[in-house]
Every structure is written in C-alpha cells, then in structure tokens.
Image (cartoon, rainbow, N blue to C red):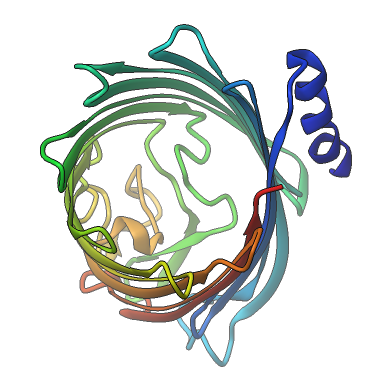
Length: 363
C-alpha cells in the first residue's frame, strides 16, 4: 500500500503545477474489553496545491478475542479468533467556482472473507456571504461476503447513502449545523443484511432442548437519521459544544444520542485539551428476542444473536491532549465506555478502555 500514499502528492503537484503543502499523519487506536481487543494503526497523507486537495488514508484493524459458545459460559468455553482488516481511502477535493467545491472519494475494505468498495461524490457551497454552507454527498457500497471455512459460500450486498448538511455562523461566538442521512441496503436472503455468517442462534424447543440455527436478517434495510449540533466559543481560547441525533430504520430500531464537549487552548504553551461525553439509548429491532422458542418445523424467519440490535444504552467519556512542537502536532487520547444490554440473552454488560496516540504535521 506504499505506492498510492507516496505517489499521490507528486501526481497532484505535477497536475496543478503549483507549490504543494503536505500534511502527513500517523495514529494508533486501541479498544479493549474483557472479550475483544482491536488495535488500529493508520497513516494519512494530505496535500494542497492551489486550493485543490488530495488525500489518502490507510488503516489496519487487528482484531483478537473470543466468541461465546452456545449454552455454556463464554469465558471457560470461548472460541478464540484473530483477524485483520485493511482499509484504504483516497480522494480529491477541487473548487469548481469561488464558492463551490467538488469532492470524490474511493474506499475499499478487505479481509479474508469480506470485500467492500465504496465510491462517493459530493458538493459543498458557501451561501449568504460565506456565513453558511450547504453540502451533499452520495455514496454506493458494494460488498462480497464469504466464509473462511466454506469456499463455495458467497453472498452480496448493495447499499446507497445520501448525506445532507447545513451549517451556519449565527453570531461571532455561536455556530450550528443540521445533518440528515438516508441509506438503503439490499442483500442476499442468506444471511441477510449485516448478519454474521459465522454466528448461530440458540432456539429453545421442546422438551427443553436448544437448537442451534444460523443467524438470519431481513434482505433489506432502510435507515434515516438526523442531527443538530451547536458550538459556542465564549472566549478566543475556549469552546463548548453539544448535539442530539435521532436514528431509526424499518427493522423497528430507534436510537437517541446526546453528546457534549469542551475545549481549552493555551496558545503560549501550544497545547489543546478537549473532553467529550456521549450517551446513546436504543430500542431493539422487531425480530430481536431475549429468547427464541420454537421447534424444528416452526423456526422464526429472522433471528439474531447480535447484541447491537438489542435494547441497550451506552455511555462514553474521553479526554484528548494535543500540543504543537514546531511543524509537529503530537496527541494523546484516553477514554472509557460502558454498555448495557438489558434485553439480550448473552452477556448483559460490556465495559471497554479506549486509548490512542497520534502525530500530525505540516510540511
């Protein structure tokens, strides 16, 4: 993956014939709970030439953990696994007029049994003497799903997404933004949209036994979401922010999210301290059950062992510290997340640590 990252700045500079400004960066993020560890190193390169920008991001998710076995304790009889997912995104942004910018991106995600490709195109325009901006983006996602233990297994999915945003400067200290998203996915009935082809669901039958059946989701999913955000800067070196987001889909899942943040800067010392908190309350999908009860002749058409489709609430708090050392901008991050799944038959709680470190620069 080194060639695209190194060739992109040179290609843009030659095309535009101007002086290039480079903004490289590298980061690593870590997520860890009692059953799962995800380490994500990433690198980024962005270049600006005559108001045109090009960028490339490359990241690897290194995942290890344990999956819960049916009918037994997850810790004592878990199945250990390790996998890696590579992600690459490249894009360009170019001004069409003094106030209008076009942006095109292409992203690809690859792991041993899953391939996703996601091209997108968007426009952004300043309105009202530069006091507001409207933007829109269309993205298509094409996926191929397989199984590492079954070379003959293949499923596909196709998704479309539209993002709209309006942001404005209300006063010298206050800005606001409204966002809306609509997405739709169609998938093969086996296993259905976002179902895990490796995950099995326990169905309680008669007389008291448990039948393990593959997880199956509907072959279509439509999602709508809207958000409103406010940012207030009471002083030149401090800022407060907050927002609310509503999301729902035709599976019956509805989620409400609120967040708040604060930032304090010391220009003389060159550091920036930011803290943020987020809380989400979600209802379960229509076909999610705490326990499925049926016999072999009357299995439910749709069934899931996905905790993220159950009723849940989650709270996350994080602290970020960044500072400027000449051309370099190092940063550290530490956070904690608490999740509770009150209507899920599996583990009812998940607490995780979040950590990160990064280094950005301008050359």
